[in-house]
Image (cartoon, rainbow, N blue to C red; front, side, top):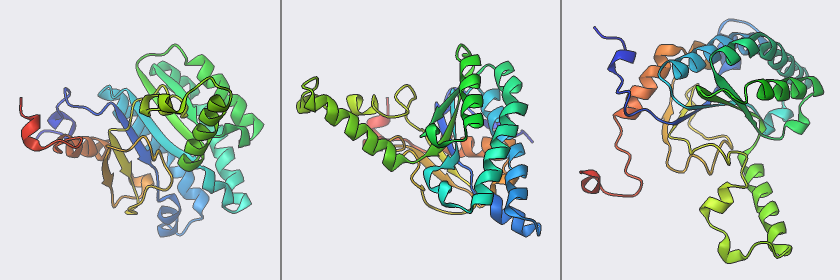
Length: 248
């Protein structure tokens, strides 16, 4: 029996996969452990997602790492998450570089601890010339705030007379988003069984295929990723057209 990876059509891969990594706390609870135990064990799932993406040469992978709303969690949990992020960046920096991945960060990173911010900027600088793939971390990220910020910046240009309202179109608007150099999302995956978007890439997922998995994030692995890609390839992406219009 062929493996899931062998069933994939490498000519029909998504260009951009985004993942809402959910379920760490519930996973830890099933083990009788604290939430921090779930966050620590989630690192293996992150590695599997990155490795699987890298194996089949999907150009962009975005991971919802820490949302703008996550700052409202208990202070101890937030501190643990920031410490874990710092430790992980130290441990994985060389691996990310050797895999040929270019690191991007989207979100309001000014709110991150100075150490984490410095590590991220350093890793982005080190990997800026890598071309094998792009790893995008959404950190202190909220899509509503991203869109509001874009509107503010466009409004300033209109006020200054540098831009006319009739010049505002989708292409221009996208150039003011955090993801201005990143293609739209083709496939959005969310783990944990929850069916919601959680303020993640609201503009960028306009025509994304969405898969909501009954898998807690620490149990996500390479085969889970490949199965999601296979499911994606079995979908007909019409972008508003009819099936008949897609026939050559």
